[in-house]
Image 1 (cartoon, rainbow, N blue to C red):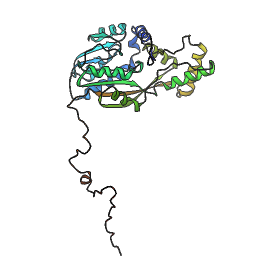
Image 2: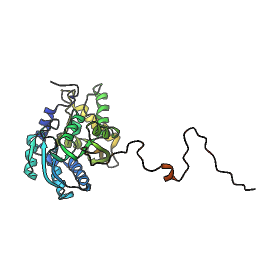
Image 3: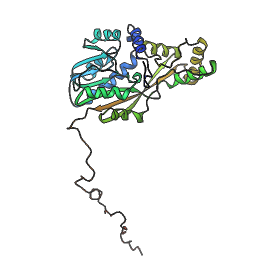
Image 4: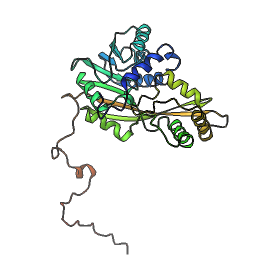
Length: 314
């Protein structure tokens, strides 16, 4: 049974990740880069974390990145993953405890974790605010969430090429790409989930390919092909595929014939509320006057301002 927010087929996602597991390391460069950037952000935080969770971590790339870029910051690191097959590869690689669990249903007690990290799986979650609210509940007071969410410019080259090819060959376009967030919405997602001090910033990762088909091969190798419930269920026409690659090259190839693929990544930071965190002052509670700080005269609303006398230069 599906609900109004069931945009994505999570069971199909599990199958796609399982199929990608054996050769995943050949295609993990994008999420490896994101894991490293999240590890750098972890290193920048002036505290240590007793128990952390790599939430939806595929093969656990964050464990390797944190060991290299944030050594000693995390005492114990757990790894959760939707696919049993990817989880096994991850455990064999880094040896951390693995929990097979869907990102949409966290099996952890409230206030049990100090840090939760997500290396770019939120774009395939049906209810992102609800999933983030679960994360916030699992965090101890003043616990930290660090995550990556793909933005609206992600794969815009590929999306536009497919739309044009399908319109030209088949007379209409089918849903192929997940709806992505905008930066203005990202911090709001954290606020809706109950996080304090929410921050969202943007990075752009550009990858160059010899041919668009190599990009599509990488997406399949990542387990990141179409899982929309309203996707077309018939095989893609060969003519449409070839025309899409032609349009991609015509619009985006450089002088050497190579094409770029853009991945816009929003990095999210939010804290579980705690009494020790800084809070805005109540209106009227200030102990100093702004006029004194600016060394100017304060006038009451509606009161005419008196101008200083004009200097006589005659």
